[in-house]
Length: 101
Image (tube, rainbow, N blue to C red; front, top):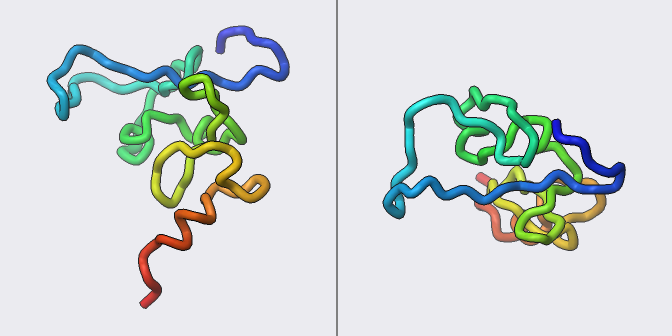
């Protein structure tokens, strides 16, 4: 990992490889999208999120200049204010979630 100050958040790098919109390259293993992290992603869930397990569990990641956290329910990034404490699910997403059977 690249050296950084103690209080600095990991930085998620948006990616664009020149592919046509809606198409993703499928050749070769993918790496974590956090700057300085070279961990190869093996599981499909991590490849789709473009996050390694360690950064998926991270309390915050700097994305587009805003501290955000990965939501395990909707599989998207949300601002830290959307979460209660250290939870991994945004309460607003849980309220809109699928009905119980």
